[in-house]
Length: 559
Ligand SMILES: Cc1cc2nc3c(=O)[nH]c(=O)nc-3n(C[C@H](O)[C@H](O)[C@H](O)COP(=O)(O)OP(=O)(O)OC[C@H]3O[C@@H](n4cnc5c(N)ncnc54)[C@H](O)[C@@H]3O)c2cc1C
Image (cartoon, rainbow, N blue to C red):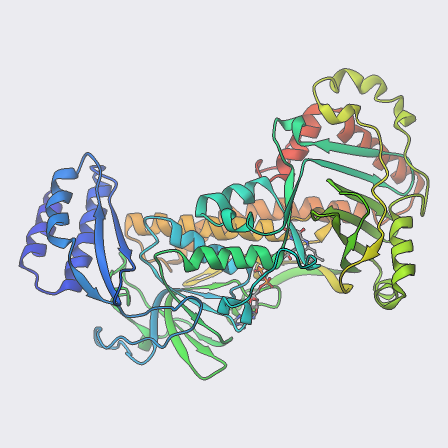
């Protein structure tokens, strides 16, 4: 409380508006630490390029905050950076302590890569009271970030889609991005069927098994990306988009030391910044550099993070197809060379993700459309082997006492709706597993595909990336709350510890599946059939699998 009074006095005699804001922020932190209040300082974007500080107070520290609020409400702080809805702007600060280079931008966080995961991080930072004042740069030459792309609902769906889990949907709702997804084409599904070519087993899942309405939602990647961009554009948040690419990083550069952030709100525990050089010759400084630049991450390479992984010697061929009836279920069949998935896309469209060996993929990419459609229908029906029979293990037999309370255990095998024609190009992607040995070091963190890539067989890749983005933003907020430098390695390690465990567990499960289904061997086929039956009939196992795949259960503990 004493320190709060000292801050109050310093505030009263201070004439500099930026310093006043700093003191207010510090006061808020002291207040928070003393558990007197939850105190939020929210820069909001007002007209005529000026920033107003607004104090939002609550009950316990109301008296002190009200005094601040009365004086500061009309306080105007010159704006140092702005972003005109996706366009890049040159930083314009002329202020700053010695060593502060006014010609280049100084940021709290530089996000390298404005793909789905990088944008999710920016939106999450923009949505939290403790992080929304941060000054963030996003570096990516992807023209989609200009915000000038318009997605028409009547256009056929783009073949690049993601199945997002209920956990991801909740997080998107929390940051305010899901409402934009809902304005575009998206397909919730509440049923899923998985089976294999041996005819020995199948399993079905139903959202009602876990008292939920949906198992997930299939959304085009461009819709997810565009929704995050809209969310960010409509947030009161200092962001600058650099339409460029990262060339070089200068870590621990003493010349890069800055004593305050360009937002004018110093973070507790001042530390050095990292200098980022861009391919267009520009540079900027940031306290924390986040690599969200995909599987070939330049940040990962420059920061010296080693990786572990392997190629699957499999390619995925993806495309959009049309049916004569609506598809409302997610289907996946394991074939000898890899799985084929048929994912609902609304309006009688579906998305195909078909994994096979690279030569087959190259042939199927260029073959006649009619032949390709025939191959797809074959692969989802009688091709490679018979339909599974429910009676293989006596229709649940000895397991029937366990199935009573799950809806899907009584559902019979179904054949997916036939594909009538193709409505997009066929795209081919090589598949690999890659994991960065570390996700964090001093002033650098990796998120999304820059930290890990997985096999798409369970549609988890970007969901893991979103998990990283939200976890990192929460850790940054925690750091700010206790006055730590946001680039501090101990803080970044907290993020790493949380996400590494979750990502490695999921990677192990997916890799195990990939390997178990790559071998055609009698006894293994029987084991797989038993696993299918277990997953179909044993309700605790079934519920656990659904929760884990939904992103709602941390570890694959099946009971
Ligand atoms: C066939 C297939 C199907 C999939 N299906 C699913 C699914 O159903 N569900 C799911 O969860 N996941 C799925 N995934 C995985 C998912 O697509 C990825 O995990 C996701 O795209 C990763 O997003 P990201 O933002 O981390 O990286 P990216 O999408 O790779 O974005 C990286 C961004 O960084 C930018 N960049 C790169 N280098 C630089 C640089 N030097 N400087 C500045 N910017 C740079 C790029 O321009 C890009 O915009 C699938 C993947 C494949 C291949």
